[in-house]
Amino acid sequence: MSVLTLDAEALYGELLRGVRGLCTAETRLVGVTSGGAWLAERLQRELKLDGEHGTISSAMHRDDFAQRGLASGGQTVLPFDVNAAQIIILDDVLYTGRTIRAVINELFDYGRPARIDLAVLTDRGGRELPIAPTFCPHSLSLPAAQILALERADDGGLSFRLIEK
Image 1 (cartoon, rainbow, N blue to C red):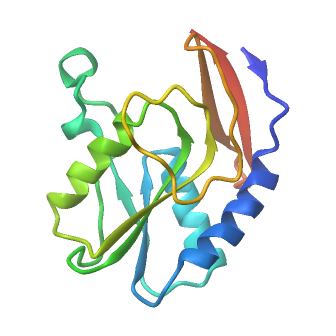
Image 2 (cartoon, rainbow, N blue to C red):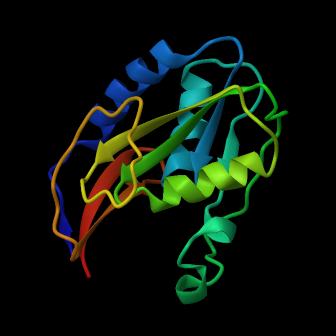
């Protein structure tokens, strides 16, 4: 494993500005477990949005469920009515698009939102599905043999770690 010199805190600052521009009175933040949930929690607090943020799991709608099984990453918790809501899905790293497809399917199990936007810290390329973020402050290209993982320190600070498969 090696530490990547990508500044997650600086990217978070850009994400904060971008998400602020997407927010309306009807906006609800939903973070993909676990990195996206960390982002949603922090953004909810720093943007002083009404209500609570949601957390969403891709586990039940993944197209590779037979190989992966049920991940221990967390469960879906949406403490608001999804129907007619303006949802911003937050994730740390966008890669193939399969996780986002799965969380959108999960979201529709709870209702029909008026709109869904996607905001991510970084897009690492390698898309397999036609999914694109509404807001993304950074893009990079990584080989398939590498995983870019967001980490959160005890004080809430964010950093990236590059992991070789």
